[in-house]
Image 1 (tube, rainbow, N blue to C red):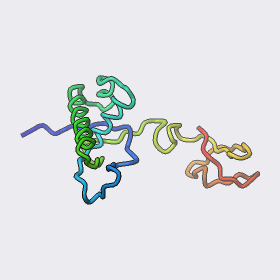
Image 2 (image 1 turned 180 degrees about the vertical axis):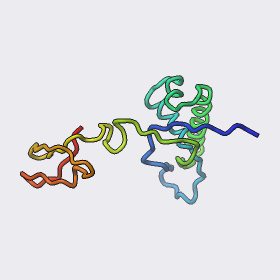
Image 3 (image 1 turned 90 degrees about the vertical axis):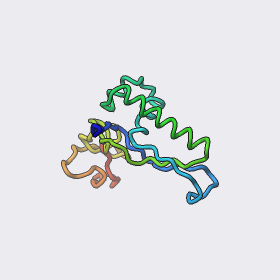
Image 4 (image 1 turned 120 degrees about the vertical axis):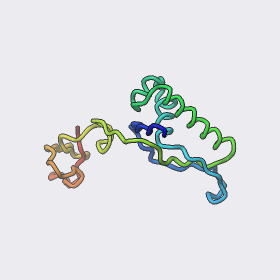
Length: 147
């Protein structure tokens, strides 16, 4: 009986999960599935330029496992490009990691005050109330969060 796979840590969830060649109907296309952890390996190594050892640490997997994941992802992408297949990003054995300064606050952390983008009015953030639901008392514009 094989050992159960450990979860890969993923720091970025893709907003777009389907790519297809232009001019071909989706129903007529063959499809290849890239797992979310393979997507993360490609993002860390090829987009962010992080070396394999550091990327493996970020995903909390061994460097050889990271390398196998990266090779698998690159092979699937090459197959899709060369053979005109659609790419679907879905599934895998992963856990989303939310770090301080990432997620809802658009990389800035949770807001500590709310500010008017029009006139500059500022007030302390009220717990449980999003800044966008508060209107500026001076000009009536919805406030935005400020870290």
